[in-house]
Image (cartoon, rainbow, N blue to C red; front, side, top):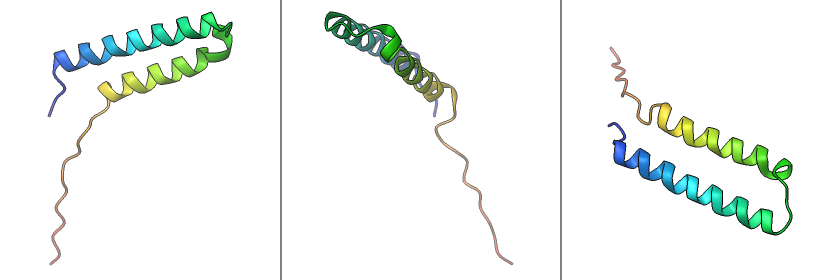
Length: 65
């Protein structure tokens, strides 16, 4: 089962809008990028790995003799 292109585009678009909104709110309250930048990078890493790594694994049948 592969991820369709529309799902990837939608997920990336929502993620970009969410990150942009959070950064603008934090900027309004005076929180700098040096405080939350590593967290955003980590969540971006998780998003990329969710698309790159396999989501299902083959079933291994073990027969006892």
